[in-house]
Each structure stands twice: as C-alpha cells, then as structure tokens.
Image (cartoon, one colour):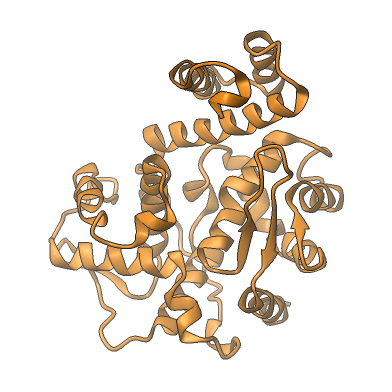
Length: 306
C-alpha cells in the first residue's frame, strides 16, 4: 500500500491512524473524512482515495472496539423467538468444523473451561481473559486465517459475546462454563448461528453505529434475498445499493454504510463459511461468492423464518 501512495509505510500508517481516531473521538462525518483525505493525499487518484477511505473506516471500527467492545454484555437481552436450526439441511460436518466461527468457538470454550475466570461486574469477560487467549491462540491454526492482530482481538470479543448466548454457556457458582462434551460440530454450528442471527443484539457486536445495527437486524432477511439473487459472484457495492434502495437503510453509494456491511455483516457470514471473499487487487471492487453450503443454508433459513 505504501508503494501506491509514494510515502513511507510508517508515515502512511500514522496518517491513517490519526484520521481514524478523529472519526471516533470527534465524531467525524463522511464528508469530513473525505476532506481530510483530500487535504493530506491531494496528489493521489480518486480510486486510491476511495481505498484510503475504506482503510480508515476499518481502522476506526477497530478503535471503537478497543474502547467499547467489551463493556456491552450486561445490556444483552434474550430474544424469546428461538431459531429452529435443527430443521435445516443436512449439513456436512467437515464444512462447519472448518469454519472460522466454529474454530473460534472451540478455542474460546477450551479457554473458558481450562482456566476458570470470573466475569466483570458488567457481566463481561475481562481484558486479562482476552490477554490469556491471545497468548494461547498462536498455538492454533486460527492466526493462519486472521493474520491481523487487531482484527483477531475483535473477532475473539465478538465470538465470545455470541458464545454467551448459546445454550452451551452457563455460569456455575460465579464461574463461566461451556458444556460441549458429546455434542457434534453441526449442532454447535446451528446453535452458534442461531445466537448470532436471533439472540445477540447486533448493536453490541457491531458497535460503531448502533442505529444501523438495529435497523440491519430488522431488515436482514431482505439483505439475504438480495445476496441470494446476486448470481454466482456478487459485488459488495451492487448488493449494498440494491439493499439501500429496497429498505431505505442508506443512500446509494454511501461508502460509510457499505463499509459497515462489509466489516461486520458479510465478514461474519464468511466466518460461518456461508460466503467466501474473492481476493483481488486493492483497486478492484470487493466481491464474494456464496459457498455451496452457504447457498443451501440461506435458502432454507429464509423458508424456516417466513
């Protein structure tokens, strides 16, 4: 990336971090971020400025998690309407076992059960617990899938909140436990997805824009319909714009909300092996494909919840 913009890598990272912190600390609007980029990177092309814009937004989401991502568990509310995951598919055990969502769950369950830890007064896992997880996770294959340290911490914290709403989690004499002995990966996958899809408040796991998270939770089935109708390969911008038009979730080409969908919603669908990102060059539009499992799963999910 530093070669694209003709500046030293450390200088570029410093500028990105500076603007990202401004978004969080000073509540920068989209136009204010654009103006900062145009002022600091006035010699680069529009495509390169768009790439910078998305990079800065992603970094700002990381800052939100750094200051706020672990303190929201006490505000969780259970949704009475349970998701009947057992009605779905048959699902291939290997497919779900290899998903990042299940690998994060297994790792967290083992970390919780092997090292008793107390929750904070707000009902959250402590920073000490996450530090312990980071120390241990290097011995697993998870860093091969997530090679960014800050993103890995975010995914762990999101996964821990999702895990807490599964039927396998309990607190015994003040100590968290995860009971998964003699439970198949498929059963864990279905309940973990149910927790993500219906039980967890999305403003708690997608915290950078709570209002957008609540609206997305209400209209997620429309976004799934758009995704299913996008063909073999879907472009993020096209899918998002169609979703915006159908729901009023955002204005067309609103890069802030498009990046929000990418960083949170579609990323977690990829963690569940429902879709796979098509890795291209920095200037190419973000695109992804539904996996064979993901297409069947979403089709039956829509039928179950109609």
